[in-house]
Structure formats: C-alpha cells, structure tokens
Length: 302
Image (tube, rainbow, N blue to C red; front, side, top):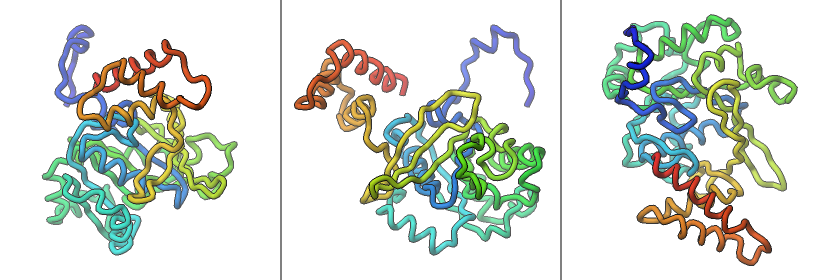
C-alpha cells in the first residue's frame, strides 16, 4: 500500500516492527541472500539461523535476533537426507517454533500461484512465520537465471506468498566462482541482480587449514551495513556454526550470554583481564573498559 509522507512525519512515526530481524545483517520483512558453492556450509548456516531466531538468541553468538517463528522450505535435499542432516545436529530445532516444508523441487514454480493452494502450503502461509528460509532459490522458479529481469519477478512472487515474513534464500555460486578475481556479485549463480535486488547478501566459503575445516562468511552487497568477514567452525556435537578463534569482543559477548543477568562494566573489564593473564601484556585498563562499554551497549539495544 502506497502512502505519502511529509519528511517530519516519516521521521517521527513509530513503526510496529523493529528494523532488523538479525541486527545488522537481515532486515525485518526484507530479502537476504546467502550464496556459496556446494558443501560450503549453507545448510548448516540456515539451521543455525533458524535456531537462533526461534529462540530469540544471538545468531552465531554475534548478532542479536528478534524472536519469532520459522519456516524452512527445503527443495535441495531429499527428505531422508534432510532428516539425517537434522538428526546430526542433535535435535537442535526440537521443541522450537520451527516448521519444515519439504517438496519435490520439480513441483515448485513460485510464479504459478495456483499450486500453493495445496493444504500444506495454505497451512504454512497461514502461520505467518517471522522468518522463511528457502533452500534453494534456483529450484523455485522456471525463469532464466542470467536474465536481469528474473530477480524482479521471483522476489516479489515470494513476497506475495509471505508478505509478513523476512525471506532468506540460499543460492549456489557459479561453478567457476573459485577464481577470486570475480566480483562478489558475479560469484552468485546467474545475474548479479540477485544480489542487487536483495536487502543484504553474504557469501560462505569452506576452507581447510592444517586439517581444520573453517567457513568464511564475507560481505557481498556493496550497499547497506558492512559486516566484517567472520571465520566460522562447526560445533563438534551439534554441527551448528559458531565463530572460530573469537577475539576479545566475541569472548566478552559469550561471557555475558552465560550470565543470569547482564554484568557490570567492571565485571566485564575484569573478565577481559583474566583472558590475557599469563599471556604477557594484554589490553590496557582503558581499552578493557572501552570494549566493555561497546559490547554492553549491544545488549542494551537488544
């Protein structure tokens, strides 16, 4: 629905929804694209995201989320394979407001609205999930991937199906995307418009160093809030992703999350002092308190 505002009225208006579902990565009711090659960890990333939003917990123990229900639409894996993948997470999504919709990839064409009158789709849409995760984007339409006009048809079709939801799409990289000379937009399969037309985009890349598997999450969209590259690893028990080799800020976030109540700045600074005890010169007292104030401000905003 269109609405005409004065500048002052727009700035003073109190919107019912906060600007981000996952701050500052995924905007509320926006479109977000995660792309990467096969086996880059996209499905594990999606399960980790679903759990965080369903619990209202911090995604990757780094980004605050707004709690809400989640719908995962799986078209990329067979039902039994997807079930096995979820079992390996130790039931990470059990007893949470998360629903799964599995379907034969050949049956989905988001432009054919009539097919979504099936009972499963009706029930899924009626639930009005806060977050819808679609795996995989390319298997939900029949349009040419390389046409610049395709995203402007596919994205609105999904928004018509789930007008009250934030949409997160998993998307495959081009097969030759390992060549780093390619721009981030060109690495995603098909037109760079998939990224351009989204509200945010990240790329996930699997690496192995000294026998350790890591997942590097990098910013793909040149506009919007910049998110620094993060190196992730899979938890050995749940396979959920988390930050590998966390810095002081991440360690402090995790310390705060373990407490029953948000600690004081002095307690946070003392924790950071303990982190560096026995490791030679650590950050100065002023630096510890500055970091503590910065991270505590994140929790105030949450």
